[in-house]
Length: 471
Ligand SMILES: Cc1cc2nc3c(=O)[nH]c(=O)nc-3n(C[C@H](O)[C@H](O)[C@H](O)COP(=O)(O)OP(=O)(O)OC[C@H]3O[C@@H](n4cnc5c(N)ncnc54)[C@H](O)[C@@H]3O)c2cc1C
Image (cartoon, rainbow, N blue to C red; front, side):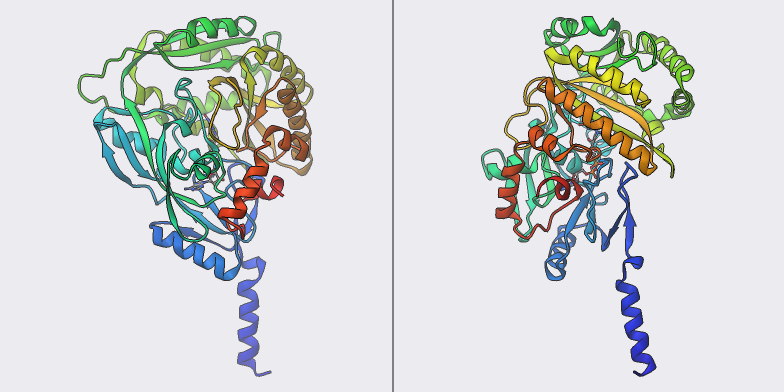
């Protein structure tokens, strides 16, 4: 064989070999994945080209927002990865209807920057504002506005580009099957291109700080939070010091809506200005019981002062500092989250089961937040089948194979504990549930498989969540 031909063949083998592939990971740091390539989406034409390429070359597509999901929900081996972050324009604002239309790669933080000038605010999003709108719809996220409920409740309409290259407009009544499968559907039906969201007024809210024992909390919540129409936002934190008051003491932050707009426009606070203080305090609590104790007491002292009778706009109440924690990872460990949805009357029962699992497995728990989510209706994969408390665990996790396997075992115990009280677990985190746990928790998976056969018969849109459980 002539030399130039041999050289050409070697080059082709080299370029197509897996060693040349691009390797990506998500924020959980255990999903190293070799993909075919990354397309930085700037237009719908870019998405169409990707779909055509996927069809021609028999490659899958996976979609990436900010990749804060932690179980490869935005990744698949050999996939063409669509990076949505530059597809982030505000397309239209209707001040009268209080609605905004955005491209799906925009983050809540950037949307807040845009709508604050109109004294409008987001109705439903996660507690922090760092996520994309497309990623949040695809997990049907929820946050501090416990009356608004999950993000799906604030969507007026969205457009989606399907596997056949057709763009479809979706509302609860037009293409209802797509509505109920795309919201909370983890990018399995196509690329959400743009979304019209219902906004609300950027009212002035007054915050309150309250300390309470877990045993008294459910009644307190029913009477003083859920039962008081003027309370608009709520979250609570549990004591994480592994001592007598472990997961028993808690403080509760609420915001009462004054129904008054500010005079003029109040600029957005930059929550990350607190990172310089928060990072070292949070890092001390990573070190053990003493550090956790110091942080818990400092936090209570400061928050009592800061949150009692503080008036802020809704936009400023809904942009919390989070980078001090969410940017923490190395080769050896990363901060992980898990979330369990527990029927209101079962909260204390679940926490009773949670305590020994955390302590016996030496989980480096850094935060436990309690929120409230009303039952999700109208979607195929609901996490809250009835009105629930969301119990959010934030912990630091070693990344060695043994440590990850250990985490999988105790996670399965926690999922059992949640399921046994009629609760559920959240899908954006590690894929640690057993097959039978997943099927019990998300029985709608069978419907999703059927709908995939209609809308995406070649399974072009995929990810590691789908590949783990939907077969
Ligand atoms: C620190 C932290 C705090 C969190 N707090 C909360 C919280 O308060 N409440 C809550 O509910 N969750 C919370 N989460 C979970 C979070 O909501 C999810 O991980 C969410 O997916 C993050 O959005 P993202 O932009 O990172 O999406 P990604 O992780 O990038 O994507 C999530 C899914 O959406 C799909 N997707 C993304 N964009 C599109 C698109 N345009 N079209 C179709 N599919 C798409 C992806 O393929 C993937 O399946 C938290 C996570 C972290 C790390």
